[in-house]
Length: 287
Image (cartoon, rainbow, N blue to C red; front, side):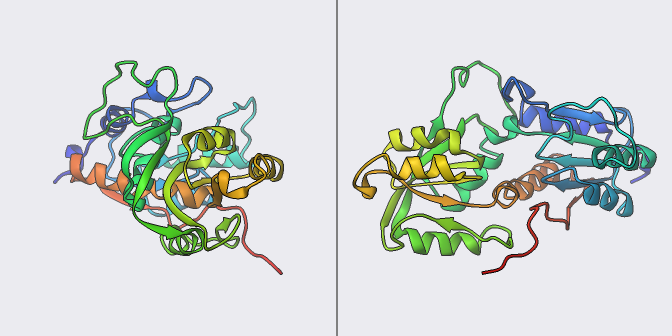
């Protein structure tokens, strides 16, 4: 196949936005094409959780014409992007190489082919319902390529009961390894059959997990006070869901194989790579 036959940035991002409609994103989110020319040709794509300096340099080294990340580069905006600033270095490296950048976030989180779908598949959850449906979950925005809108987080039943300790141990072998590992609350022998899961930061949904009546809630970035207040909300700890805290980047990295599969299915002529860099900020631990 000649280079002229390769798809364009616009065609590739079009598949992404058919699968993960931009209208599915939260109002505060910043999703879509961040950098690059829609008419530029693409023959190699790099997938990553975060658009870090290391990922941008990797894209240049591996000659990728498009980087696709889960987290936005400029979620809070920026007035200055000098090359000696982290985000400025990302922009400079990618634009110099002619590499485009597309970011999906809460639109991907809602999809059966996104982060929540990856967790449903990983846990083989049955009878799935959204943890937080939201006011606009049935707004009529259609998706393609087998993607359906689930909601922010999911609630379901495991195929067989297990314990908090065994579930946490199993997850430690199923998600990318991190220095911190995976944490859980309470008695490791507590039985678990029903679960709530919210990939990424989910302590704002602790109340929803309790209201769902599940045995345990899996999410990331659980802070001291919200987690402790959740556990202390009943005198009997078995009356509130146990908590399992998975590092944020590891939780959302489960989407990358699904994105890779999507592009292989829809554009088999593309070479789709996954980044070798893990963006979990912690490299070591003691004690």
